[in-house]
Length: 478
Image (cartoon, rainbow, N blue to C red; front, side):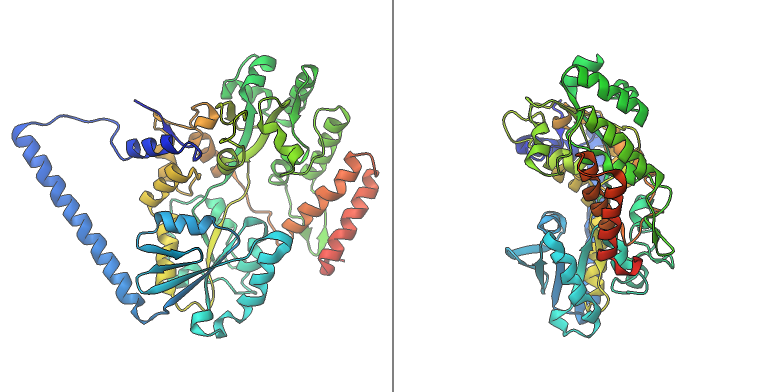
C-alpha cells in the first residue's frame, strides 16, 4: 500500500492519502445472501444519515430565519477563510473577500497583524458592536493565544460565552484542555474554540544526527536532548563536528517561556521567571561557544538552516512549522528530501493556534454556533483538515485514530507519523500562567537580551532596557 502523506506541498501524495483515508484498513468478503443483507443495511444506514443531516440542516435554517443576512468575520490572514471554503458544507465563494451560506452574505475583513494593526482594528470596533447596525456588526473574530485574554476577559466582554450560544461542555469534550484554558475568562466562562492543537517538539536533521549521534531514530535522539543539560552537552558534540545546535537562541525561547512557574505580572509587578532566566544563562553560553547565533526568527539567516548545506541541527516547532515554513517545495531543502525527524525535546510546549470567538452583539448566533461546532468539534471535518491541510487538530479521537494508523506518515519527516507525540504533548501543555501581558513582555525581553548575547550590554543593562520598554508599553505597570 502507498503511504498517506501529510505534507501539503506534495499535492499528488495528499490526494492519494485522502482517498486511502476514507477506506477501511481491513475488509471481509461477503457473498450471496450475506452480501445482499449487508448492502441493504448499508443503504438503510446511509438513508438514515442523510435524513438526520437534512433534518439538522433544516432546523438550523429555520432557527436562522429571523437572523441577520450579513455575516462579518474579522481575520488577519487567509487561513480561516480557506478552512471554511474547503470544509464548511454549504459555503460558496463569491470573490476574494465575499461568500454565501444559504441566503447569508459572508464578508471577510482581513487586517494584517503587522504593527499591531489587527488588534487595533478589533479595539476600535468591538466595544461598540452591540449598537452597530445589523449589516455592520462583527459576528466572528479570531484571536491568538498571546493576546487572547485581552478579548475574552469578562470585564471587557466583547467575546460571547459559548454557553450563551448553546454550546455545551459535552460538545467540546474531545478538545484538549489547554486550548480551552487559553480562552476561559476569570469566571470560568469559555469564550472561544480552536480547531488546532499546536503542541510542538524538536525537529532535527536526520543526516546530522546520524553522523554526530550515531542514530536518527526519534526515541534514541531524544536521549541526547531529553533535558537542557543533555541538550547543551549535545551542542558541544555538534560544535566539534562543525554544526550548530540551533539556528538562533530565539528557537528555544518558547520552550522555556511555556514552562514558567508564574506569570509575567503578579499584583502589578513584572518579574522574570526562573525558567526564562535559565534561557538567558543557557543561551549566552551557547552564543559565546559559537554553538548558535542571535538571528531573528523568520529572518533569512534563521531560515538558512532549512537547506541541506546548512550546519543547523534542529528547530523547535509544531505541525504548521514543519508543513508550511520549512521550504518543502524547494529543491535543496531538507524538507523536500524528507530529512527531518521529530522528537519531544527538553520540555513540552506549544506554539501558535487560532481561536474562533463570537462577538457580543452578533445578529447571527445560530449560524455562528454552527460554524464553531462544525469547524472545531465535527470528527469528519477535523480529520479532513488533518489530512488535507496538515493541521494538528484539536480532537483527541481523531488524533488517536491517525496516530494508530500504520499507513499514515509525514513525507517531510521521512515517513514518520508525528501524531502520537503531538497528541501526548497537547495533554501536557499548561496555560495556567498566561496573562494579558505575555505578547509584549516576551517580545521586549528577547529584544533586550539580544544586546547582552551580542556583547553590547551587560545583563543588568539589558534587563533595565526591558523594564523601561515594558513600562512604556504598559504604563499601568510603572
